[in-house]
Length: 249
Ligand SMILES: [Zn+2]
Ligand SMILES: [Zn+2]
Image (cartoon, rainbow, N blue to C red):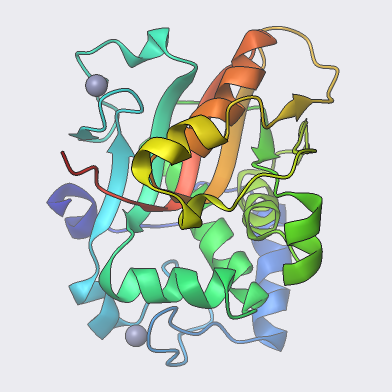
């Protein structure tokens, strides 16, 4: 946690064409702090003001198999590479102020948050991991749920993550069935509720490295199931989320 907090997060490695589009966007829509909504400098690399940044707990890497929090670029001793999801990266924990930000994004219609969240996620994945993804895949939402909400927050997040990484966005998965929302179920039911929920609709070669993006990692059941479908097609899957829920025994 402290490792990331103490280091400067910069966007300097990205090619100029990827920075230019963002710069013009920011001229039109000046960036604001994600939590207190104070205006930020136009070139701010982190979408938080100084005060909020001092309070912010950066998360980083987690083992997708045992849930352990890991230092940057370190692999877990439990051999996560044997699991469908090879790695997991989160901006922060799903609690406190960050939980409120995610609620605004997911339930209160603030879809504009997708841009700063997704771009920040993409920048950090480039800087903090050695994954080298080749394309970005959003975790799909049920069509009916997307209609009710008017948008799929994971898709929006993935779009801007892909943009920051300079990668194509490929919605390779669909979610045709009707299952109860994960947030309405107990931990045990969440694990079985998503089984068989996703269908693959892509046509990629084996060996492609995929970044799977969702907004929140709770039990991990949704992302693990989505990763399993891509893994069965021979793809190497890494997961990225805006918020991680610590697992309690
Ligand atoms: Zn702030
Ligand atoms: Zn582990």
